[in-house]
Image (cartoon, rainbow, N blue to C red):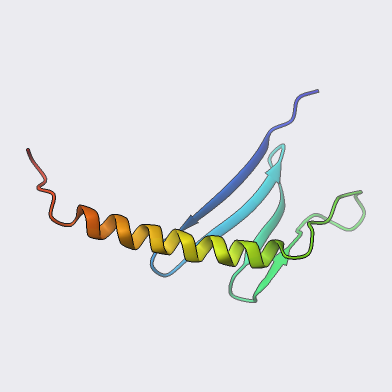
Length: 83
């Protein structure tokens, strides 16, 4: 059958999120506070593990996201609310 695969990546000035899920079940997320990737599925199920470097990739994505956010805020700061 068909499956729903979802990836979320986003940031703010002070926080960020990177998460992967399949069929509504969270498979992996980046724990930026404890500096590690987390696979929250219980040990009794057969699940795959993410490759080494997935967490480091999430950290790099956050740096790019914050840079993009800063550039966008600077570009939009002088645009009037009404034309």
